[in-house]
Length: 137
Image (cartoon, rainbow, N blue to C red; front, side):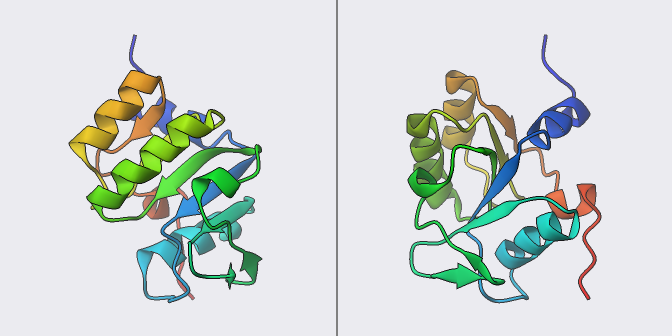
């Protein structure tokens, strides 16, 4: 039996910590807003960026493989071709159970790979900023 989107989101949000793949140091970018959104909601979030050392004062992981094991859910804010590589890395990692593709990051191949691997994938246009009620001050 498949879960409703609300159930999928609730499962996603149960993670002790969240990876933000595609985090950006620029505050006008979605990758930065999603990171700040988790922090505003009192969640532990780890930015993932291959070239940045830290974003919003948080140390960056260079890749999904460097995320701590407490990260069971990742938000992906990347172009679809990059999303596919992120999903492959997440599946190989083995501890990531939930992947939320922000609107624009979705790729049919990445979604199919998630389904095949038994990963809870949110890629229906739902936006974590809306769900968690992000306020950009």
